[in-house]
Image 1 (spheres, rainbow, N blue to C red):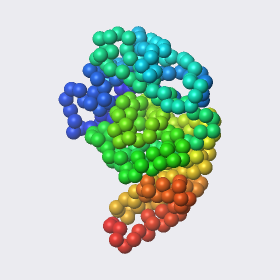
Image 2 (image 1 turned 120 degrees about the horizontal axis):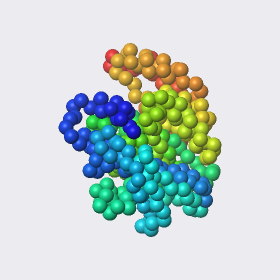
Image 3 (image 1 turned 45 degrees about the vertical axis):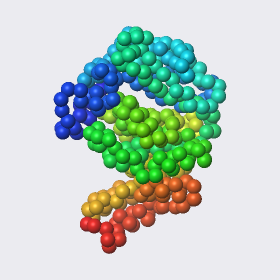
Image 4 (image 1 turned 120 degrees about the vertical axis):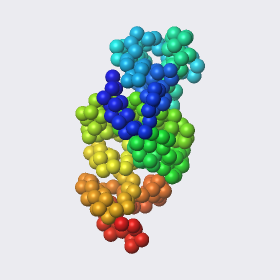
Length: 318
């Protein structure tokens, strides 16, 4: 159940009201939220494919529903949802690297028409695959989580282009690692597709993380990722906690997007927070600078950003 986390999300939306608000927020259909969880694995690895079905304004779980799984239009298995709405199917990943879009659909034809299909990405990669990890909120999108909930966030300038260049020219797999709760999976997947971000697995938090374990979540996921795929080259984020997570997990390169605040007091606070980050990082202000770091070996030391925040150009408003 996501009741508490969902209520917390809705607390920032006093301007919205009326029935159907949850459906609009989450991208559900006819009150149902049906979604899959992405998987990153080796060729031939034993994996578990997971779909979840929930229903109602506060996402009650829907047990005992049969979910049919298919790949490229061919059904290959089925699973029944448990008391928490999860349908889990164990299988062996394809023996060739690639992106495999697994579709889940309810076996009941009437319900399937009402609910629609769900999808997950089975990203099969060799152990030495180069990987870059990026946050989502205020890293790929520029308006913050309130706008995610209340409206339609804009992508950061150059983010799509630079990530495609990393993917196509340099052969990186892009892993999206976010504290967004998993009940925003449908909305997030649609947003990434709308703006043509490169395909890659997206990993979300859940209610337990939001309520109890926020600080430990990303380091834990990153350690698991690096244990399986040691060629994780860089992490990109907008918060000190992102870079601390990247550093603690042993990533060789951390990039922090900093947007200097208008007031002198806020800039001083930004500088103090930046100075507390352990270890070297690149403190940048744009995806163009990220591109310069990754393709042109440019450097944007955190010390330079701290100095800029503490002593901005005369034209910087206070």
